[in-house]
Amino acid sequence: MFKWLNWKKKDKKNEEEVIEKDLPIVEEELKEEIDEDIMEEELEGEILEEELEEEIVEEEYEYEESIIEKENDEAYDFIEELEEVKETDIEEIIEEAPPKKKGFFEKLKDGLTKTRKDMTDKIDSILKSYAKIDDELFDELEEVLVTADVGVNTTMKLIDRLKDRVREEKTTNPDEIKDLLKEEIKEIMKEPGVGNEIVLDPSPAVILVVGVNGVGKTTTIGKLSHNLKKQGKKVLIAAGDTFRAAAIEQLEEWSNRAGVDFIAHSEGADPAAVIYDGIQAAKARKCDVLICDTAGRLHNKSNLMNELNKIFRVVEREYGEATKEILLVLDATTGQNGINQAKVFKEVAKITGVALTKLDGTAKGGVVIALQSELGLPVKLIGVGEGIEDLQEFKVDDFVDAIFS
Ligand SMILES: Nc1nc2c(ncn2[C@@H]2O[C@H](COP(=O)(O)OP(=O)(O)O)[C@@H](O)[C@H]2O)c(=O)[nH]1
Ligand SMILES: [Mg+2]
Image (cartoon, rainbow, N blue to C red; front, top):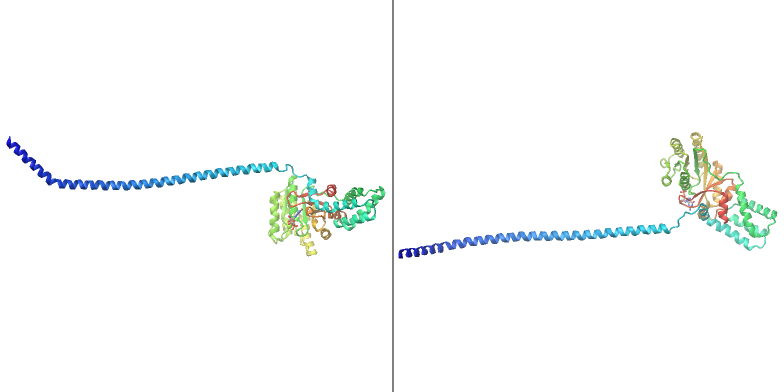
């Protein structure tokens, strides 16, 4: 028993010695383990931190994205709202706009406002200032008519006829003069016996448009094409004014606006060659009306005559069967100058009618009366504005009524 105890004691001592010996090693190992753990944890911590940072960045990004999306949505809504407002505004504007277009006669009256003011208002005030009809009254009337570019000869003729009527009908009241004058003007304008209608039948037809620069040839061709197309006619325009490239482009623009065919060569080309091509194209495409623009350089009468004659020869030779109109375009604002141009063109071409432009901008509408009664040139078309709808067929009664209304 004692021995066992002793042994046991010894054993314990041994054990203590072993522990004492091993302890530093264990401690070392443990420290190492702890260090490793710490390192691991630190590493993990770092990774975690990184991940966290990434997450934060991602969240911030998402947040920013959502803000942008929201702003975009708001912007889209705003645009939609704006568009809705715009649409309703337009609808309102359309609703508020006068529903009907002006009638033919109203437009004519508008276009002739200046002529009416100048001529009729003056006539009215003269007639009001006289208690009886005498020579002095006729003198004053004569002056008004001459200054309205009715023309001296036509004015004299009108005054003579007016005096005859007054005598025949024993008129004493100056107020009645106005109606008499209106009737006499209508009569005198219808005298030449030439119709005021453009003749395009039988089909095919060709219209040669002549006149000096700037009177409104190209514009008139554009408007006329539009009118004829509306009547169901197939129209082709030929750009015979080859003098400037801009003139060709301007005519092409009008052909696009009117929606009709267009034939052109380049700047400086021979106008007669353009017209030749126009005729061939009109035949091939079975057009009803070929309208030819021409250059209007009046600096030299023989030049003008040569150029136009060459064109007329081509038309005669290539399109003998066509119904022909030679339309002289005159600018109403030039008054007597227009009359002089008409005289020159009458010498170089068989003018069949006149298109009188810019009647909307002048008080010289009286020139229509002079052209018709003095030169025997029927006015067939009148321009009362720059728009595509601003060309009207000329009717004596409508015209005189519009001036005297
Ligand atoms: N107010 C008004 N201007 C017109 C009329 N016809 C033509 N014009 C204008 O007159 C100018 C000359 O016209 P354009 O056709 O180029 O003349 P062209 O040289 O004879 O071809 C342009 O500015 C046209 O807009 C019209 O009836 N009324
Ligand atoms: Mg032109």
